[in-house]
Length: 547
Figure 1 (cartoon, helix red, strand yellow):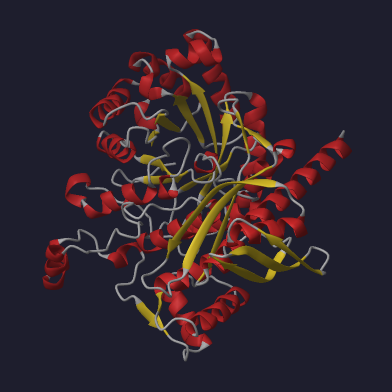
Figure 2 (cartoon, rainbow, N blue to C red; figure 1 turned 180 degrees about the horizontal axis):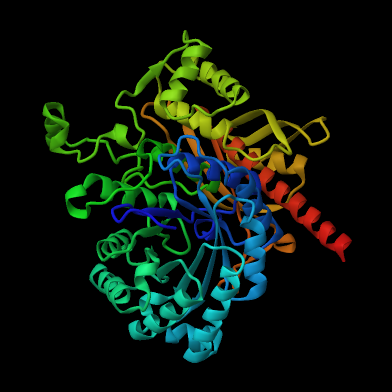
């Protein structure tokens, strides 16, 4: 895809590489919501998944191509987002990827093959000549299906640079339009990576006919620095994820690269089509759906990114924000005012403020749900902030389909009593169920009571809690992860590595009563697990019927 020399294309792989983070599994509806938001954000290319990985992944990519692929509203470029599917360098993978993405007006096949001697010897067990031949065959097949083909030499950061020029030159002749140079294991330093990109662009035959791309991992904490070094060396596409999520230590963070280019025009002299005011909202949506909490000191979107506590800093900020802020919070979607609305505010004012916060696309039903929670919170808190409202949105809107619904909980506990919890749930049959349980603490008692009703055996693998704002009346957010019981584990296989791991399900809940927030988070995770089982069963029945 052609573009001006001073434009950097944003290739977002949150839904593919980002979802490979342990515990970040997303269902089809969640992927669709994130894809819609990536389109509003202005992402140029969305790598929607790995279609051959599973029937669920194929369906998610197919629906994104159909429903999000044609959209242009609110996009600076005026063009719809390119929908890409990942494929290994073989015909079945490539055919499956094309079948998934072909409905999008602009679609891409992204195929890859390892080129480092380490991978050739130990993983693929082939020599360099066979590697070249496989790469040519894969790109030739892909380019016969669609005009937009990206090729990635996996582990390029540890590959022989001269050998890379041979492989890349051949795939250009075979029809590749984008060449991506991944630092797959986060091994290189900015100087090394920049030199590699510069060398490949100047020594690869046909280099001027393709877009050069960079894809870096953060194992040494250098992903953003390496990506920017690649851009300065001539790359014009960056492969990133929201919040920097991804395998192991994660990928290059979208928001960091975008804001570095926007904030330092004198250094880069480049631009992107990203609507930066959507960055914070996108970050919080991905965090809520994946259950991966953003660290407070995370650049751009962390809770402390625009906070100032030291007296010297506060004094400087009061005199001029330029003293300690190189960006204005408004540019990334934060409002400078924290005090928002009160209990006397009406629905219209509430909706208007949601629009200001970047939630203009919410349906009337979603706004009504959030407004009811907001009014209840107003009765409990003197001050309701933007952070409180965004926590409500995450808890009410960014939730899985409710198989079981939590109606009420009641807890009794104390230092001289046994914690006891009673729960009231609505089941998938529409009936109300109640039960009670004892626990080692109030949260344990609630979870055991819910388990008695739902009957899904699982293991709690992670439990984290944080206050959204200051004060004893603060809204609390709880994030948890659960795994099915050992006898009923849903193993997930990574097609790239062949490794399998137990599928984990995250849950998110928010409330000014932290026990209620914990119960909401647990129900969210359970509903994800139950929905995944339903989808798996439906896929197995569909496969059996086809046979």
